[in-house]
Length: 156
Image 1: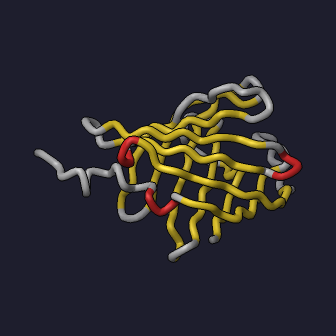
Image 2: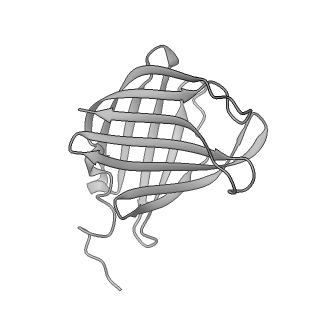
């Protein structure tokens, strides 16, 4: 089946283009049953590249550093790959892959956290015009249970 470039998924992240204020809630410690959250403010700027096939955003996390997200759309598979660059180390983290369905973007992959293998899940939701949410969760048991460890609320 052939898809028109306007509806194949490459425009899924167009809502994110531009400047944002970001309210962060990040779990103080991951994978240990912690219930304490660090809350802080930041900013983000996202821009599209290559006609929407890629986009990049720079995240200013205030006193918590910086990071960069690079997203690439695979036209044949109709899926996104999302990579995070850690601002402290410059390391490119392993990607998560997925797509938007019914207005929610779900992206999963494998990584490690403090030496433990984890499954990683990103969820993207557009809450209203000028409002979006990104949620990160880790599973330490192969996807049976998920611990939400970072929530970013974006507002214009």
